[in-house]
Image (cartoon, rainbow, N blue to C red; front, side, top):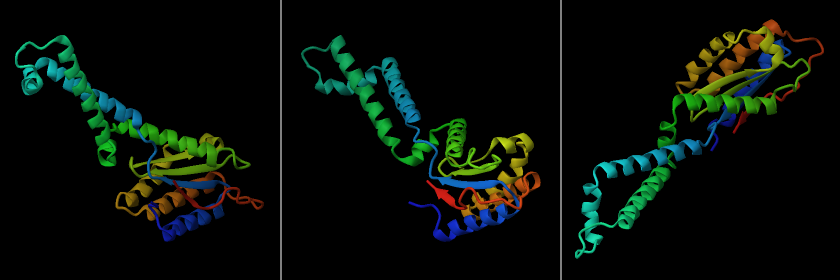
Length: 224
């Protein structure tokens, strides 16, 4: 399902076109529903839940063996090692599967992902998309990617090497702040447009538009 309407796409596209009128830089905007599926994190939490439950069973065996007694041979009150192992294995497997299935609900899955992991995955995804959509696709290597990941609540700005050489990374902080001010209130298009305008102003200062400049990357919002 698309997060932004055709009207909002048009707002961002228009902001890109206007910003690029004053710079030889090229701005690419990408909005993604998520940066990763985090299946490895879900597996880790499922394993941790299963091992934790098994550990509790080891410390409090009566809580498990007591209820399980209804399935036990009443003529033999002693549990054999194989029976105990079977019960423990069943508990571990069931706990793992329940934790794994529970994390199919995105709300729980993303709540369990550490913030640092979300940030790292969003950064990696932004860099990957930049390499595909903007890196070295301009003559002067002046491409910039503005990336927004909705599930992670993360935004990234990735610039080509010619821009990195001239622009202090801290300069992008103001552009990010203006963008996030609107996005936090659900105004995605307005926030992206504000970010585009700020990035365009930075590019115009360091890479003014030349007389023979051409539009090397289409002006549009990419929604993944």
